[in-house]
Length: 154
Image (cartoon, rainbow, N blue to C red):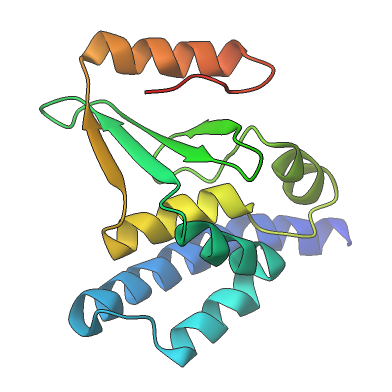
């Protein structure tokens, strides 16, 4: 990939994915399901990680830890082998190895299955919500930022 293509990709893709999820969220709230066109659009942007994210959704693998006033929030996605990945809502980053290799290093994907599962779970209203103190949310986020593997549970 040339330097110009790479720079263009970095500036265009975030707005495309934001617009796409906004449209899909609107359509899902109106129709209660994803249309074939929505799924095709998502697949065109996200590829194989989308398929794995959809499989993960069947297992209710996303938990939102939030304070009573919703000021501090963290998402936790359980992976296939029971590992937990702590994410920030609406931020395209995951501490998993796939994200490091396929998104950051080789740039073959836009995101990983954990981020996509978290976003889709929120769109579908299938996120498990757990309330915690602001200190508890901050502690989990701080610990996960310094952990080799995110094994912190809510």
